[in-house]
Image (cartoon, rainbow, N blue to C red):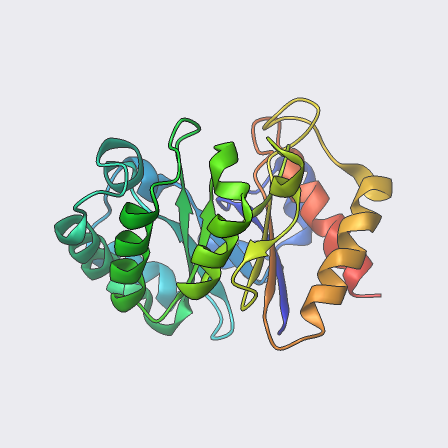
Length: 241
């Protein structure tokens, strides 16, 4: 599968419950309808290794997880001297096995690009995993041409985010071995639905990106008012036509 569409987390909104199997854990039911999920809880806290192993065991073989890198790495150490934390994190999530598809690195809005720090960090992270890496920078310095070349060299895809803090943030960048959209909801972040008309544009982009060898992911993070699942179903229907 060259494109994957899912949500941040796997909570099943009551209005869509009849689209899922009745039996099974929530993740198990979710994975019957979607091909991927983004785990954000890993940003805030660690999970027991057995938890990751259990999650991997209850989803289909072709299902994939994106896992957000902990804030201790991105927001506390701010990518500096993270070797011990990277090793601990990668060891913790090892139970996902080949179902780990993407490591998501979301940077603080005030983290400016330090080329030396970024090169060292992404080299170390890349050496620790066979998963693809996606980075969601939020400071304008990360959208200069030099930053894009750095990410491409280190095989790190730059997330296409909505709302986009700068125009370039709305389109994929960096390494083109992966395209990764994170749709947070707009105009009201985390709450606003996108709806069929707006999603037609994303469907075109995802279909185009998914025609190549590189996978295209789209994650809906507008979960606060349960809009994400409806948008995900709509986008799946559009790219499946």
